[in-house]
Length: 108
Image (cartoon, rainbow, N blue to C red; front, top):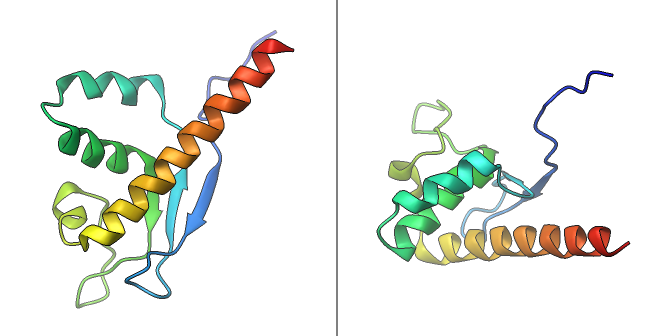
């Protein structure tokens, strides 16, 4: 039997506190390849930014002309710190929930 190797992560949609109407779609976990990149980070702050870049699947932010902005370090840097903290909290909740679910499954 062949089994297709694909991204099995689920997504959740959130709104940032400073941007009513914003939609940020987060993955509910990281891929192994994503996690391997953390070894290259030099600080917790770098790790946080990299985590956000890997966990944000999409968002509805645009520039002045209406062109969609990519999820990048440059654009993350433009967000208020309160929104970055909010995003990191949501990411941690997703990762912790996934770990708890995995631990429960392995005990069964």
